[in-house]
Length: 473
Ligand SMILES: Cc1cc2nc3c(=O)[nH]c(=O)nc-3n(C[C@H](O)[C@H](O)[C@H](O)COP(=O)(O)OP(=O)(O)OC[C@H]3O[C@@H](n4cnc5c(N)ncnc54)[C@H](O)[C@@H]3O)c2cc1C
Picture 1 (cartoon, rainbow, N blue to C red):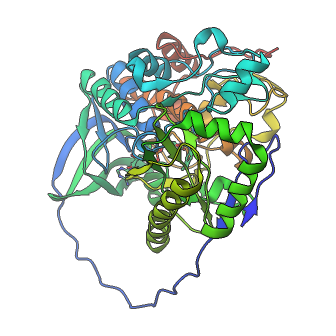
Picture 2: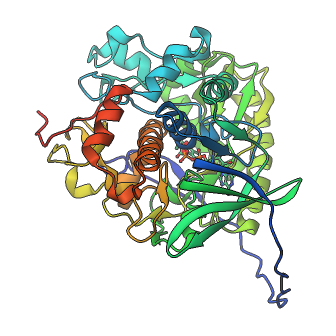
Picture 3: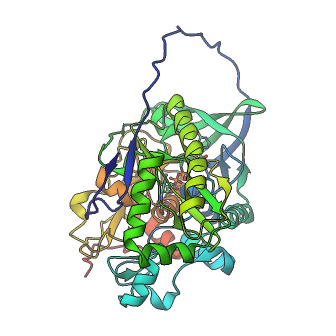
């Protein structure tokens, strides 16, 4: 087990647990797949592959700009990790002064989610440095560095439903239970994908494909360049299946954690010792539901089917072991029960696109709005100004007919720490969907799209973008 120490670069502190020994796979030869004719299921302007936060935002934005859109998702719901992965803690959408910088699609979602589906500080408290308020919210996902932030927890079922209804209202053709398998590429341009479903193999042809799979499934197989580096000391590459315990009293747990720090430290040390894989609980949108987004397991690849299986097996066992331990020893967990384990495995990083641009660590201190800015992200600490997200981070250095959004956009490993968070995925998704729709309408390649036109469209959609070069205070 390794423990990460918090720093400006390492925003998450956490225990990391090493993998089990890997079973060697034997070389059993190959079977030659015969060629066959694949029926075309649909032709469209914009095909979005993957219905996570970024893909949902992309489909909604492309349809808003008038495109004929298909959204293809392998599971039975939208929201990706933010719903099916039980990552129900939406990271910071305000900057360190309390100003909302993650806007557009994110704002639409929070305006429409029912009040009892969201738990977080009221708008009046965003940016507050009041020690009482910051102390209260720091135990409830919404204060860091002594500042209250807009980083609420949400009800995943409500977010699934709302995401689905938004895209359907805009006449997006939604296709669940369908796994994009092979990109159709001609002359260096992506022209669609072949997908697998219970009906077998079918193709969707599109003018522009948006890869929102999180793992770059489409752009990697289409031949784009990408990075897949691993940083052993960071949570970055760790995986886990998240889960929820019901029947808890999180206020009592927080009273124990904050009021009896020595006993809490003893509880944590004993848990690590007895269970091996061990994780702390976080609050959810309800006091009687606790969220576990770990134990974070290191040394596995989310592109290896044996590793994916191994992490699921270990995580489900850890869930049962935690229930027993927490029921016995954790105040507030005496009547806990296993409510739900995530149907989507928690993957933070596999591939990152090599784009014509990128979000880079060297940008953090300067606060400059890049000329091709499509959104703005809050910085990791109050030491830095807001950070500009360029359109180039979505455009492959080498591949046409495709844009990327979400956790596999072009950025360096440090910047990936925040670029992969849900709010940033909404931002890059909305930008990619809008750009794809405009490129189709104008009959140009996404890389040749006029950025001023894209920025104007994003501003109309309520996104926070600064169209000309300026320096942020
Ligand atoms: C354990 C953990 C904790 C995290 N904590 C936080 C946090 O506290 N706050 C925060 O804001 N963020 C957090 N994150 C990050 C965040 O959840 C993800 O990075 C974000 O959801 C990524 O969004 P996305 O749209 O890029 O991809 P995903 O959410 O991964 O969605 C991708 C979608 O594409 C679908 N898909 C994939 N491949 C295919 C295919 N070939 N064909 C069809 N469909 C496909 C998937 O089924 C999925 O629905 C955490 C992540 C993890 C794993």
